Image (cartoon, rainbow, N blue to C red; front, side):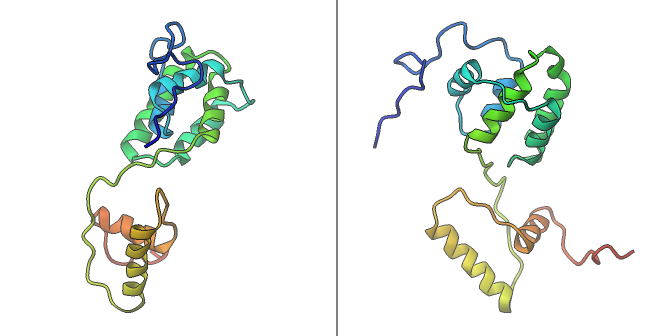
Length: 166
């Protein structure tokens, strides 16, 4: 096991020097929730980053698109609505740049999903997924029809919606 090196600018014990971390204005929470950064790393990044020209609107778009639970996303968007007026003008740009440049934190599934009985091609697709999950290191993301199906099953939705027909 390799010992983790302190972030640049951190003290030898890994803490951030006093004065770098400011009162909680929400910026750290956005980075810690949506990236793999811990609070000290996020504070150092905010203290040393340069604005990239992004706007508040672009930051909101990144938060909406980031892998997060619905509750986390809603809380972060509410935080932006209530705190953005207190931020320095360059803050949205710095945070947007950090979100683009740091690996995302993928939320863990809230619970196990009980699959209904499947047959045929769907059974083969599910077996392939289970094999991938056991052999390919994560995090990885499932997209497409199977992702939609699992999302619906997880939230108790079954059946056919009719592809937009009324």
